[in-house]
Image (tube, rainbow, N blue to C red):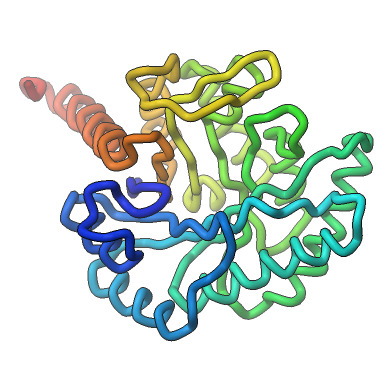
Length: 285
């Protein structure tokens, strides 16, 4: 597993993506999700520099596409604008060497869930043809608010029906949306569903978001630091280990790198403890 942050670490020398990548490596983290959430404003030349730097430092990159995406909008103009934002994210992401493009597909907009699914899938089928050859994976994200398209089953079904897509599993969103999936059994259920519907290869190429989260009956309200929330991140890490999941764990907590480092440290402590038990060696203190 690789651990990193959603955006530039707070302790970075500057707010530039290049300094963010350098700080990720200094911290001992391994991946970073570049945030295009307010628009794709990066030029090709800078994107090429980012690719060179990230490859030299062995930092894996992904991109979060703009928030202003709704592939189920009432206006076809807004759907086309949404597709353009996704295309721009994929194009620049490909140039910078990003492996994945994370995005929220849209809202239900008072349509039935089946109709919303159909419209969103149709729009994405069109986009996948346009970005064919970019060498980048589209990752629709599980959503935390109940009015948003993005239940776990919806996202997995969407990916199972389309080449070139894999899910972004946000365990905090799933927990906030359902009030469940916050135990070893719950996290195991997520990984078992991914494997059943998308195959073992999907478990070996996971992209996961984690943070503490505040929620109510409508779902997600705001992100929290892990230790200020009820998220059972230790059991999540145990499930990661037991299901032999590979890929990126991206921390979205407000304190970013602090919780990313906490997750990495806790994960490797679990791994070391298990190794010691298997060899009947003293457990690490």
